[in-house]
Image (tube, rainbow, N blue to C red; front, side):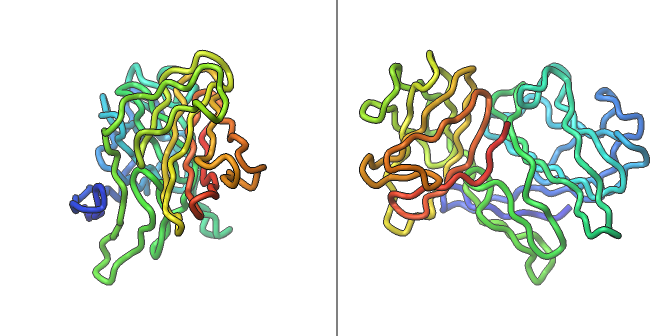
Length: 267
């Protein structure tokens, strides 16, 4: 085991385990799937297509598990019994494509985010190789790279439980949109109607702030920039909202105080 070193709330260094050389169970079932216990999990052996691994049981909200398929067969990543990933239904897996060295193709990586003890959100992305990798921005990391000593050094924002689930403003619109309550993970738990609204925070002129928004509702949530006159998201019109689809998550980074971009969206 090696260690990833993360920075919680930019102050306290914490060590997070990484696991490499994981063997997926060849029968491909949820019951027999190899359990994943680390934050970063690199599966290197899969003796058959659909060999399986399984996410943590009863994770705390904000837990992140990253799974990379470095094996030469497609693998399945299951939730624990009775849990689900995205909107795929209880006990159904995500499938990660294999590594194909001859084609210079890296195996797929998936970042899983626990939004409840039995529900994971997440997204495909951030290929990992020997020299550099990028992981979820806003919850676990901004940038990670291999150090001289071979350990993986990671400066990160960890989940901060400093706000309750959000209720989007009924009726929508910019003026009364509910402001997000964390610089880290913001979970929208209640949205009565499509296009009820929340609002991003004001940030410094240099930008660089990254937040994660998770919509756990069955409605579209409108996400407004902080400034109505010059705030933009993804080069849309000033003050225009980003539509966060039901049961999805998105990472948003502030390029400047008024300009935001979405980094990755989970569907």
